[in-house]
Length: 161
Image (cartoon, helix red, strand yellow):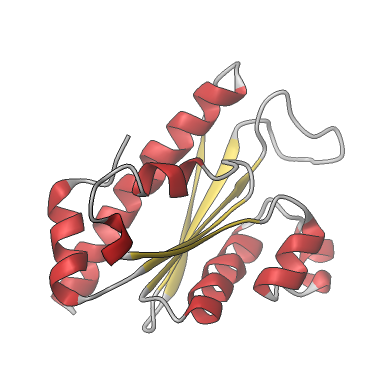
């Protein structure tokens, strides 16, 4: 899994950068982005913020938001994306959070629920989807493939603005 060639070209030609904040994908998104030669031209930082404390201390996600909505929420993933973008002064902040199999017994969400957030200087938004895989690795792979496609869409959208 790698970021597609056209997206890499657009990032490079515009001198745009990406930064990631990952929870349930455990760094696989950053790994996938950096699997292409030249990725150092557009990949600036990758954070694995698996715990709530990491989201709070590294990405400035307010504890109250996590308590109110949970770590696995639209609200938290958008704050993660915005936090990583601002902290790293990157063009795009991309964040992932969700519930990997076998699940979290303290959550009311179904196992396989994933949120991907994208932040630019102009907007912040997120997508939710379900990845029903039995193994954590299959779950992570599906999550990262989806995130890579969303990055491609975000870069193309930013180009049009």
